[in-house]
Length: 131
Image (cartoon, rainbow, N blue to C red; front, side, top):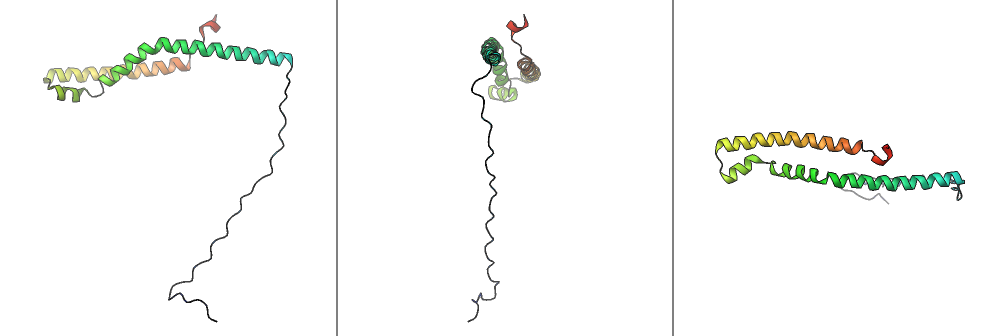
C-alpha cells in the first residue's frame, strides 16, 4: 500500500509531545509552637495593644486632616479647565487671563499640598508615644 496522498502539499507534522511538569514532593514543615513562653506571650499582647492604639490615633489624625483634603480636592476640580469655563460663560479676555493665572497658582499650591500630605502620612508618629 502506498502512503496517503497529500496532493502536492507536505504531510502534516506529528503533534509535539506534551511536556510534563515537574512536581516536587512537599517539604515537611516544622510545626509552629502552640505554647510560647510567658515573656513572648506578654510581648505579643503588648504589640497587639500598641497596634490598635496607633491605628486609632492615625485614623483620628486623618479625620482631622479631611477638611484640608476636601478643599484641595474641590479646588483641583474647579481649576481643572479654567479656559473651558471662560468659553462657556463668554468672559472677557482680562477675566479669562486672570482665571488662567489663578489656575496656575492653584495647581502649584495643590502639588505642594499633596506632597506635604504624603510626607506627613509617611512621617506620622503617634503623639502619645512621643511623650
